[in-house]
Image (cartoon, rainbow, N blue to C red):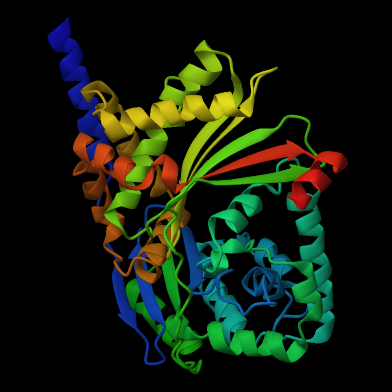
Length: 446
């Protein structure tokens, strides 16, 4: 029976390995600096067209936050050849779907079409890059949209202000200290000329990557890309120089208030390395070890066995310049936040002082394999991975090689990384509390 179980486990692992087939791609540059990546897969009549721009929430001046997120909305307004408000109608009426998202480091636009509408997708993205209409009416319209989004996601949403409170206390100088969505007063104060200047600086072909993935013919696709994107003029080279943060050498304590909650939360946060650093991959495994699933260490301890927490979670927020490692918990009943902090530190201390078991380590490796396979299980996922790996990691081939990074991580690496980044004197402890005007006023006077 034991040999049978071993054989079954081995077969499952081999199944993961063989299923994660290599993603073939072709990449090249246009004369204007636009990087192009093509992935051909003719197994289904679907194609994803996408453009990722190297511009995010951190690309701003003081007093002008939120521009990148604002443009995520604004660039759906219309172009010289796409009437105002017709973008989504054109996509849906041709059997497609589309979306966009912005982080602190990049902005990503994409369409998913039946493959016979590949040219439509390319034309629309070239229109967005070459012919957007940036006028006061559109700016005013999208300003209201962003304000409503902020109200829904942050101001009026339970725990909506938790991450911004962490950011503002974990960073003092770097733009990561401010929320990606920005501050409404900054957008209200911005002029139309400032918005146009922002577009001219960042939304240029030499600051972007175009990915086409799916049911395509390479030579036909290359010709269409040259026709639609080749005439777009390149922009000036972008120089970035963000202020550096001093290392955290003593525990920081902070308090934030939320009128939308009744149950407080505690967050332990650490400043960690950029996502291209191998240690960032190790931190992903540590997150999985602590809180991924009912058998994870912190979940089993705080939620299942000791019944001290309603929720507990750990995650590595990977970013281009600095990462952030966060562990949060919501207490049960009369459990104090100090108690939760002590219990969390006890488990993190074990990571610093002991090697995790071989059994737990193999579970982490299996989860990493599974996550890797799932991330590239669709054309949209493959397109996203190709764009991100080129633009932010400067290595398109990571789509095939990244799993080897995880496979080469050892138990000793986990202990080393925990010792390097997750020590008490390097952390922020944030108490996130229901808003009480008297308590808040007292805290603000200290």
